[in-house]
Image 1 (cartoon, rainbow, N blue to C red):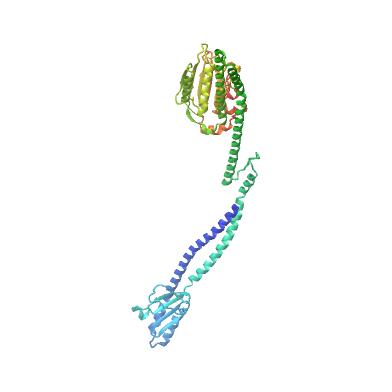
Image 2: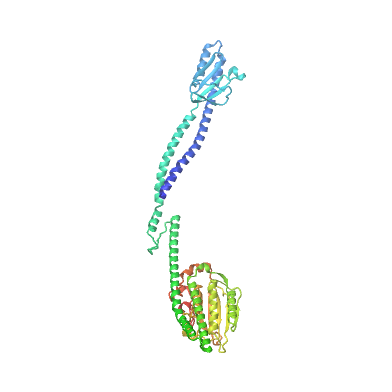
Length: 508
């Protein structure tokens, strides 16, 4: 059923109900007013009739017949619109309208009372006049037809007629008004009925109508379609990431698996292999196995970063995270000499697992490639609190004592699978670091040590963003670190690196 029809029916039903309810109240008030008016009229007439009746009784039965006839005539003339009944010494006098059959009159009715006779109601008032005034029995009655009920019946009839007419007129007017009022909804329905997000990229274009309900509904439809598009895009990204994971893993694992197969064949075909050669083969197998595990772990981390959602970001203590990462490095690499200078209570809004993975890889990179000439991995880690201002940032630096990175190679270190000839890693560690810095809208720079000594400094700046910043910007980031080379990042999302340093997106 159309909305305009529903409104017309509702108004067509409610209007007569309201008319009848107000009519009932009006009838009650009018009925009281009519009866009060009739009672007042009967009392006023009783005053005149009682005066004429007393004058007649004063001369009735005396030697003045002429005067008696005159006063009797005056009494009868005063009863033209009311009935009277007077009991006197000469008998009973009746004049004016009388009930038929004659009812039993009330013996004590100084105020008008209702009496029914022949299906009609009469108002009756009794008085004592003349000599009877000293007694207890009235000798004068006044009777008046009760016309209030007839008048009320006429009002009821007209009220019902008005209610029926009001129902029809109100329903018709409501339908016409509602049909015009819902025109914006009809237009919106026509515009949305042809939208099928599965087959067409067309979306709702709405011009504000200044009708709150219509504009709110259009905004809701636009929001639903936008979220549908977003979910479709995220689903596509997830499928692309899954395919890229499978393809990359297949491609990158082929060489180490073939190498492992060759070494296993050597061990199988030469059971009497020289112990020194066997040890070398087993060592190579262990290294290839570790490389495979590291590669799979890194690929999984990159895939998670490409698919992370805003609800995974929370407020976290970056100092505690750095301390935990350094402690793990010291346990797993006892030969590492790590010094930490971290300001306590440095909080950022971020993805804890992603930031922890980034810090772990920064330390692992420094331990692997930052050894001094004596072969000892000395690493200095510094964490500074946000410096204040609208774009406050926390700064994490990792310094090593290795040979350093040539300026022309600083962009390449963030590329996927970029490995040195003697690197034991997967070539994805710094790629994962750059991915996490980009997701957190930060900046990573590569430079020489500031003290002039050999080595490299990797500096990560993370803004103190809030929940709303993440929710509004995370979906805008081109998260395709695993599936391709992201080159189309919006320039306003990332701070350009100073001369000689590297922006993670450009480096990638």
